[in-house]
Image 1: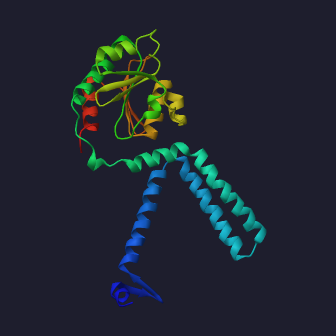
Image 2 (image 1 turned 120 degrees about the horizontal axis):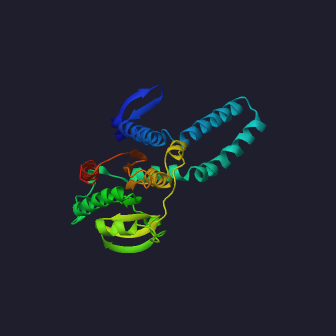
Image 3 (image 1 turned 30 degrees about the vertical axis):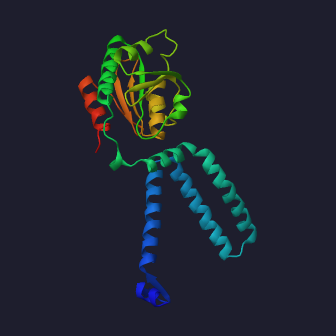
Length: 260
């Protein structure tokens, strides 16, 4: 009891607030703050507003002793939790992936990675000049085992010649994505999830929508070469940067894979 009194900082009415209580409040507030940041701008944010409305209605029903209404809202909220997980699985996956990222601890270049980025840039420029499409995924901190399993194993050192060969029709793997990890082409012909954004559906083709879709769910970096226009694009975090030339693409890649 004496220890508890010593840790009490102040009182609000009959409540004693100690250092432990303040730490507890700050931690919970930070958790809710970052959860709201992760949901900002997503469909999950709209779902959260709906949940807040139902909770407010439940408390009102309990206060007014409207038992039937309270019972009905309780059942809706129970089913709503399951529906939330099913309907917003992509958003939840993206949020968990972002929580798992730790920028201060990003690794330095592994041997050969800088050279691999240079080869990706060369391949992108050559594909653009030849009027060929390309879709190259560069894995970072978040593993892409599920994407790897959709393609054919290659396990070869990254080279511009090999990348151009893979994306040259009528090769069997030219329509899919190439997955690159630490200077190695792991697989080709991989399938990527498509973004559900209407904006990208109207303006871009399948390669660009697939690139945006994957980067919405992971921290991967995707280089896209348009078969129709030859434009080179870089996609990170669900955002697309278009019409890049070789030097600009190389500078952007180096900045993304360098320890901050």
